[in-house]
Image (cartoon, rainbow, N blue to C red; front, side, top):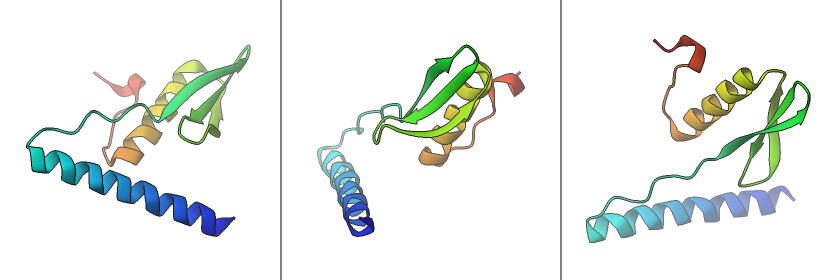
Length: 90
């Protein structure tokens, strides 16, 4: 199973590299990355953070604001950008 996961990850990486190379050759900006994580309500005060590519739950929080902040943190980690949580913004 791990070999399949590693193989799929290698294919995804090749896809990203090939797409970036294609856009650099034609002199255009690549399309904006889609949202990777989504907050899904799972009860009165429970929220799952789901990775859309794999449909796996990557975390959970008990308030919507905390769930959104965590989803944004996961997005920024995946993009390599550091973001300030919503509650800490000026």
